[in-house]
Length: 160
Image: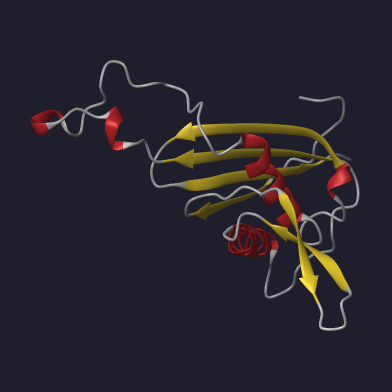
């Protein structure tokens, strides 16, 4: 592991469902009657906010004891996240082989969504819930895999 001692207990949680990435920001003009206007930034993925709420809720449940949530971690952390996605039907055979992977089915998920955007959405959801700021992340381990059910499996380790 990295260059520090990690506390023995990791904060582990799983969030079931299709993980969502943080979309790109789009600037939308807001027009006003008086001829003036302003601009508002909108996230291009409308599913990101509901997914982030699920991640935050799962993280809170992982640390909550008797209805009490401990203080935020304020030191360095290592975060591990594995995002699991269902394989497309085209990866499987047909007929009696419908449950068997085709010989040419890829082992690695080298398709959308982007791993960095998935991580950004989930890490932003942990800010203010488990950690004070995402700048505390000293080490980040990410994986995007095929697997069912679709889910995020996460672990957060606090450096001493």
